[in-house]
Length: 244
Length: 298
Image 1 (tube, one colour):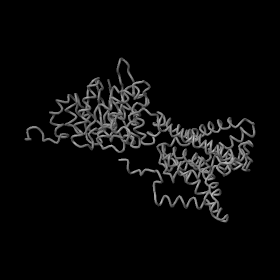
Image 2 (cartoon, chains in turn green, cyan; image 1 turned 45 degrees about the vertical axis):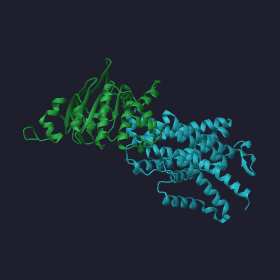
Image 3 (cartoon, chains in turn yellow, orange; image 1 turned 180 degrees about the horizontal axis):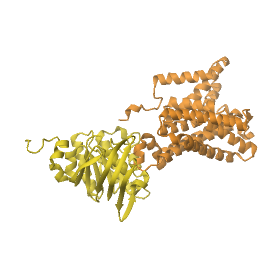
Image 4 (cartoon, one colour; image 1 turned 30 degrees about the vertical axis):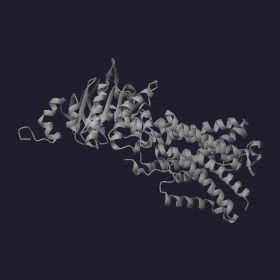
């Protein structure tokens, strides 16, 4: 569904992604792991068209059609079926919850927006309860649900999720990860950026590890979870054979 | 002092406040979406007044044509200013845009003087607009009644636009968070252009009303209403449309009452009073009447 091929991305004077290759197949949950500043967010921003690479290719293919993402404006990328739920939630704080959701469907002209709104209310009952309230008055976890629901309102084929667990209480993180699995169950492919590698590997099919803008490890999530290098670096576990 | 006199002053304040509100609401809308203090906003009003002059008094078209023209010309001019002057430096620090807007303002004033001469020209609306009517014992011209009515209608329409329409909500979303707005597929430059167009149309309309009230026009006439709109917007809390309207009316009433209730010798201190009021309000409410503190965005 998504193929990134040799991306070189710069932000100002510094190169943040080096020759990055990444693939997401339809129906997968793919985790992109790495420390702060490794280039995870830059990867997502490049896919959404907000960062333009100096070299490489980014292609979205589905239903036999190929979209060259590097030639599409950000609004056309949304229209092509990519939704990006950004880091730090970024809900429209001064807009009501319902208005936030309506903006998620900004480009849609079909008549099913209202029924999708109702569906979001089923998926996240708190959003229905607070529909008229300001998004800025929701708790952090509720804002995260709103951000996810808002992204889903565009009916994406591919959902980019940037650090959904950031700053949330553990139970809320569990809820969010349940929701991610539900979303995949509904047929949406997910590219999940996370620092919380343990949680991400539990629900992902495959994963990539980014370090300083380069992919250093990739493979099946179940295998990576056992990988000594990854355990050492991100799961805070001692290398195998040294106890624990 | 009779009740009739007071009522008359209140009505005068309502009329003046309406014009301020029309200008201030556009000013505030532009600030809200691009964080730009646009000092050229008053000069769009000036161009609106000259357009009305040309349509009504030079070409002799009817009033409705002038109204359509000032709305259209104001909208196009404001979008053009945005496109040429502000859009190329969208990512520059806020102060750059502010200085640019001063430059645009001075440019427009001087172009006006160069092309149209700095001499004031008489601007007389059709006679029926200047007829006095009796309203609850006070006197109002048709123009004044129209000013108040049109302002209220326009503000209602604008409220509906920003609350109830897809593009209006998108404008507010862009003002809140441009990055997230882009991720929704909103074209930020289009949303900004819409704000300029609306603000410009209202400024153009205010130009027609202001000119009709003053009875004369000149290329520097936009300065005072532009400045007053700025004050009104700051009093209301820049970025808040409701605040700008409240600020406009508050300013209109305060000015008229100051001039009307104090001995005539104080009349020339009117602007000193206006800015004193501004300072006083900001001392008590640093974010204006309806402004939100920026810190609350976490």
